[in-house]
Amino acid sequence: MNRGISGPGTPRASGVPSIDNQLIGPKVSYTPREKRGALNRHTVQRSVSTRDLIGMGAIGALVGGTLAGVTSEADFPWMRVAATSVIGATVFVLGTAASARPTTPLANAEAKLTRAEQDRECLLGRDIDNPAREFGPNEIYTIKRLSERYCQSWRTFKLLWDVLYSSESRGNYDIFLDEIIKKFPDGLVNRQAINEIHEQMAGVNSLEEAMLLEKFKDLTRHHSLALSTCTELGLLMFTYAKIMLDAKNLPGGATPYSLYQSLCWDKYESFKTRLAQDESLLINDIRILRAVADEQR
Image 1: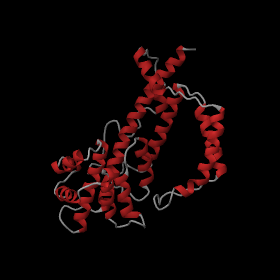
Image 2: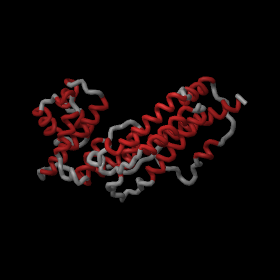
Image 3: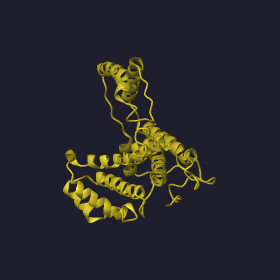
Image 4: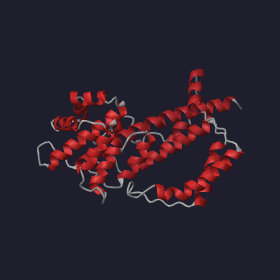
């Protein structure tokens, strides 16, 4: 398991300039194409009427008053939901009013950079560069946050977390099988085919090998699954196959805990790289947009 990473994802060394210093540099002439690109990436168009705001405020009251009932602790045991109709109405109106105000491309880019910095600080707060780090139950907050940032599924991680830490599902491997079945349209799936794939996946050593199995590819093609669904399904099935081997004390198995640790490392390293790339692109866009703003004065 690779616990180190170099390149764009590596935390800034002491000799690397801070983000503020990177934003301050010599004046550069940008091409019209570079300017258009930055403007297109960060132009926000919103138009909300006063009547819409009043209506949305009323909806906010309803949302605030019912949120606690809609979100159950059984589904999200690590969350504690508390909301009232007054808070719901106030927050909804204020949030909508703020979103209705015109946002300049520069302000939008700067806000995105601030969020990226906050996410990076959250990530580095997990002590991800410590090779002796053992990840525990609190990783779910950061994994959820950053998975949602990049529109990635974190379902396999959540299932492993359930097996290890949820009082409702601890030690219950069948939740993986249930989730696998749900990935198929209308729940239509050949159980025998799934069992055969699990048996084959038990004999390979990596997710990449598992997803190259002909039976797995045939199954996903037969059900016309999207690429993202295929990737998630492959990880689910591979994880389940290794867990079941371990449960039966057979060679090649892996404990839920070891798989959880590997998944944490893989996700954190991926997030670290992507956040560094995001920051670099946003810093460049902000420098371009500041130059555009200076030209318009």
